[in-house]
Image (cartoon, rainbow, N blue to C red):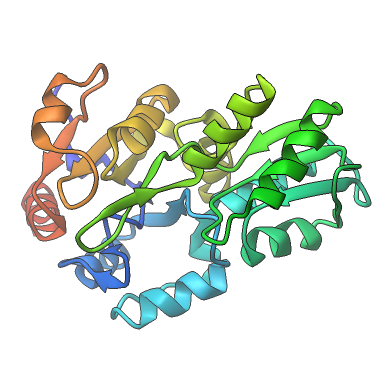
Length: 267
């Protein structure tokens, strides 16, 4: 059955490759948020990027003319800390491969950052990765620590380049330990369930808007929600057509999506 934009009342929005690439805003970001607010469409910005806090994302978006509250941002780091709090009590030792924002999210939940003696290893994107960080995480996992990944994105889109992402670091640890991580971020169900619960959203009225087939679109399909792809990030139209779970709707960019959505609502 054809998907109608008019039926969407809740929207999960990816950021990297959708609202911006690197430090550069993409066309249509402010207009999309304004459109959602104008039409009462509740939204949540859901990103696999664990290197910034919600407050830092709000500041970055604000510099691009996109104004949202911190409560409208869910990061894979925050989602991972929230999930870990359902498994382990405050005070549990956690080794982190990641940046300050991920450490902050875990410490806010009461976890204690540790070395090889950690009970859990949490790995996210880390642009300051060192051999020592990988070695300590490897040894902790080999000693029996539970291995958790914030997300499996192998790459990250900059303005003109594509660089290694968190999934590349997970792959290094998998190769060194023969242990597969439990992954929280897209396309896995944990972050989708958290996002839907945060919005109080029904699945049949919810869509995810993203640029990656292997995270946003695949995860949305698995979650049973509508999938909308824009061609301003990682995946191409040709890849989408051949993908195992092609997006329900595809647009060149955000202005094209907003225009189509206005037509669907007769506005």
